[in-house]
Amino acid sequence: MTLARRLLAEFVGTAMLLAVVVGSGIMASRLSQGNDGVALLANAAATAGGLYMLISVFGPISGAHFNPAVTLAFLLKRQMPGNAALAYIAMQVCGAIAGTLLAHAMFDLPLLQPGTHARTGGAQWLSEAVATYGLLLTVLLGVRHRPAMVPALVAAYIFAAYWFTASTSFANPAVTLARSLTQTFAGIRPADVGGFVVSQLAGTLLALVTAAWLHPAREPAQTSPTPAPTP
Image (cartoon, rainbow, N blue to C red):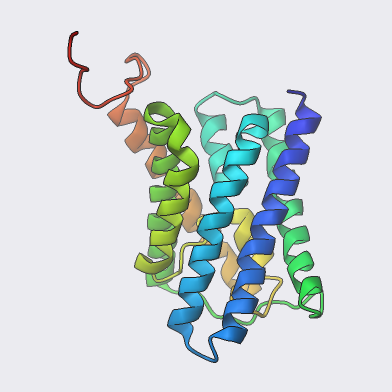
């Protein structure tokens, strides 16, 4: 697969992901009539469903990273060249912004609207580190042990992380930046983006260390944590 095709897949996939995240947040907020719990449930379900579809469709083309943290992890594992990684990240950021603008357009909202939702403080930063740590472990270990199940594993984890983290699990620097451009249910203040991104990078590095400890490079991958029975 050529790099150009992979980059297009990353752009389109990330744009569609943000259209799902932001658009479902708008729709859920309108239909829930002020019930934040119902809105969050609908937003989480839509995001998980969208992720499952997007990873299944675009995974064979680009690996379906849609996330600079995932791309960074594969770069640091030396499974991706630096120029391709930088291009992936650029497409992810551009796609995320495009997806947010698309969601605004679909709901007839101002295209550019800097976020006003305050998301800052130690609890939020810890939540983002934990959310990203869990997501990266899901990806790194899933690819190694259950590659065919990665779409379902990631979707299931993100659905759960919406609920068990105080930050509702952004777990993605490109998503965080793009969500600073919306004042809707999914938004975040631009001033709070830096703290989230630093926490996400910390979670990424910790996940890499954990995955490396669980499976040193010299050990072959296993398809099961226990040996298969001898016929």
